[in-house]
Length: 406
Image (cartoon, rainbow, N blue to C red; front, side, top):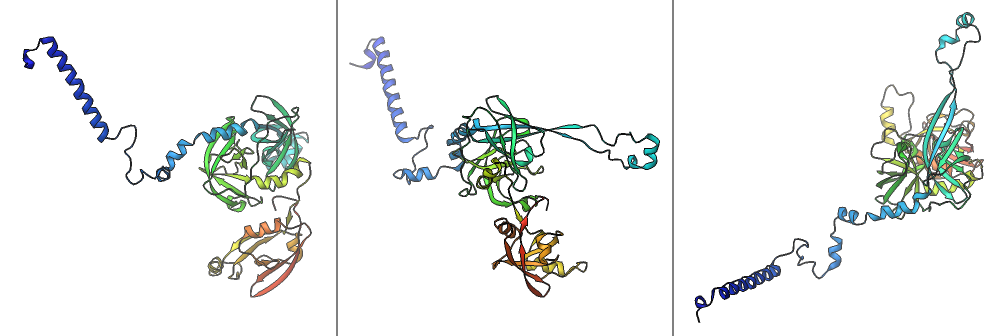
């Protein structure tokens, strides 16, 4: 029987069935030869090696895929991060020397005010709880010389803080609050195994914005305080590109596991895209003394110094306005000797180049500073200096640093 001789209704039904069958066939054929838009086409080289596929994942995709580690890290330590508000009353003398003129004082009388009215200064910083009894670690410059310290917890509670100890040389301080115990404690990690490129998470209250989190990486290690521009400190900082601003000072720098690896410090107002943190291992060494209210003793020599290389010495010596000739050797050039210091008493002079200490070659100012810091107060160091064309061996007995500005 011919197709045209079939009833019209049957012909229409048959046409629809054939169309459906044809569509299914075409769809199956397409699936067999074309990759899906949702999944990439299989790589013939890596089809049988799934490990290679994982290795080819881009760094950006890996960071996005593992972004939840930041949330986990912050949740682990967040409740232990505190805000520190300080108040300090200062009085200033009237700066104009006109007021010190005897004629002016006779004319207006001795009762003329010599000082401006007291001024109330307020400060803001961060910190974190290191013991459930209420011990808080922060920066020394956050609480130093404060008349009143208020510690505010993330849950909204606030307590008056008592400064237990301050060490200006390392910019560390411990504050005690009485909150009834059983406080959340920040887990302390170690900074000894931190590597350049590790994740770095800064938590604190920058510019007064409470509970702020910024993310970056460790951009370099052992950045000396001299390089940072604060030669009165004795620190090797962790440098990070995680944003650290005023108000972050004293807050924790975390690794990807939520462990404290450093203490943030906003010491460079002109820093853009970089911040600095005190390694937590250094803080651990000093925290025990600070929480007992003890003073941290630091040995010193009493010299201002500059790393010297033969090239730098040669350039200086070629300058006709140079005040003295410098030995063209590797070492540390003494730029100034503090009067009545151990260095002065031992006979070290300006222009000397320190080349050895206790038989160890000295190649940088940072190396010499660390060596002295690791010595004992009252320890005698055998210092070899190059003075002009002569070499001298001097015995320098270290003393306790009394002023951080030295």
